[in-house]
Image (cartoon, rainbow, N blue to C red):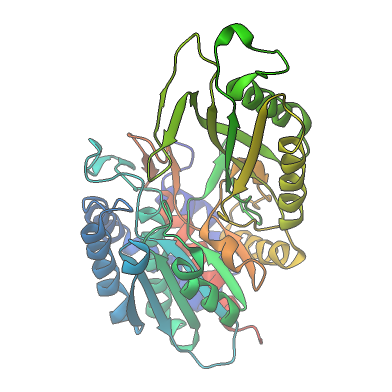
Length: 431
């Protein structure tokens, strides 16, 4: 195991815990006392399939979360998202005394594992458990609930102004984002601090805090050319065909786009005398013959950047490459809006510093800022321009998005304590 069992950790940290207020000490005890309850909730959530396209399943997980939040004093609203062909979102509001920081808590109800996935069941193995979404993000929602219950037990929840948004399509978002992320964006404009309960990043036993997330922007390349007999390829009249032209463009992407914090990928390509993508643009069909110069090539990929400025710059470079002359061929490229970037800011660093104050009082190691190259895109980026944010308040997990996804159940202890104390302290800060 990466960490001492919770009981030993608490015993070792007893002198340091004196730095906690009586209410904060009560919260730590509540988290520990309700640990098995938290694990049981996680098992219940995981055993309900909620792949992003499983409308019924996502809705059922939403009802499970409603049942957890309403007894804590939250006014829970289900926002249906049928217009973007997704289930919907939970928006839950807790009104406090109106004096402290207004907090936005972010998580998601869906997973990448659809109903036809062979990976469907929660299996506990001591202080580890496997299951679809056990870490991403059902473990995060369990940490959120455990922290809020601890605050209620200690009497600190009543004064806290908290809004929770649990999206139902984080893993496969509905299009357009102007609709599917409308309620999240609105919540971000009302908040003073955003806390994202996706998975904790742990590297070599060290917990990290995330103050940045990169964008995820998809692109589609289409190259067309004159089709004729292959014996004439490379001649002025025939040109080089669509596949060679597309290959030159993609090779130029590889060689010329490189810069810090940027990655770019080609995920799907098809070419020939005929080529097409399916409606979801994740499958392709193609036809052609060896003795015919191909007339079309299609390719899709993504770019990931750390700021909108970097996105604009890279897109401009890609358009310039596509706009070059390719004998006998014409090329065009388009970009999907995708997920924006969450750039590192001083406000985000200040939130991590406050969390590290909590860590010090809990007797835990300080959490360095995670390299954003080690984390993917996420919903918090949609509010990053409006509110300071911190990512990674969920459970520690391994193998996310793949069969065998495994959560470290013991991480519920430290993550729920961190979150409960941080939220309590933020609720006492003036706006």
